[in-house]
Amino acid sequence: MFELSPEALVGYLASALVVVSLTMTSVVRLRIISLLGSITFVVYGLLIDSAPIVVTNAAIMFINLWFLRKEFASGSGHGFDLGASHIRPDSPFLRDFVEFHLIDIHRFQPDFVLTSGDDVTSWLLTRDGLPAGLLIGRVTGTTMTIDLDYVLRAYRDSRLGHWLFGRGADVFRRDGIDTVRSYGSTDTHRKYLVRMGFHPVAGTDVLDLDL
Image (tube, rainbow, N blue to C red; front, side, top):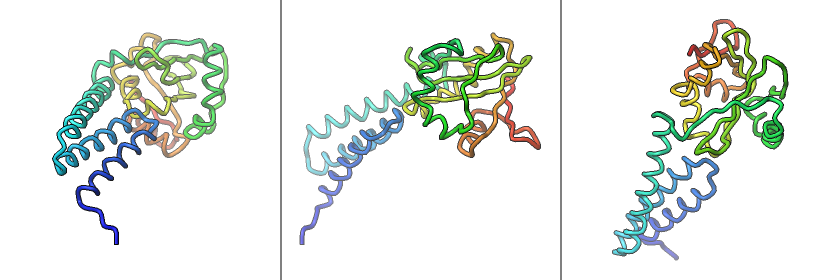
C-alpha cells in the first residue's frame, strides 16, 4: 500500500495552498493564502533539509507580509492610495462600468436601477489611481441616499469602504452632506453597512451614517 511520509504530506499541503491562492479574485485573500503556503513550504524545506526551498519561500513570505501590511494600512490609515472623484451620472464610462458589472451588482443590491436627475451624484472609487468601485446617490438637503455602493471583487477586502465612510468622508462633507443613508436590501449588504458604521433607524429598513 502506498503511504506518504509526513514530509511529503507537508509538501503537498504547501503546494495545494499555493494553487488555491492563484484562484482567488480578492487581492487580500490571495496574499493571505499565499502567505500560508510559503510558511508551509518553509517548514517542508526544513524537514527535508533543503536550503533553496527555505530561502525562496522565506522571501515570498516576507513579500506577502509587506503587501498585506500595505493593504490594511491603506484602509485603516491615511489611505493615500485610495480616492473618490466625482464622475457625471451620464458619463459613458459610468454607464459602461455599470452595464459590465450589473450581474455582480444585483447579487448585493438586486433593486438597483441606473437613474439620472439633478439630485443624482456619483463618485468613481479608485485604488492606486485605477477604478475600484462606484458610489451613486441622490441628495436631498444635507442627506445623501445611496443607490449604489459597489466595489470590484478584487478590492472588497482592501477596506476601501472603511476609508470612504471614515477618514475619506470629506468627499461628502465638501458637498454639504452630513448624513449618508442606505437601505439594506440583502442580509449581506445590511451586514456590510453595519460594519461601515451605519446604524439602523428604528422601525424601518433604513440605515444612517452621521458624518
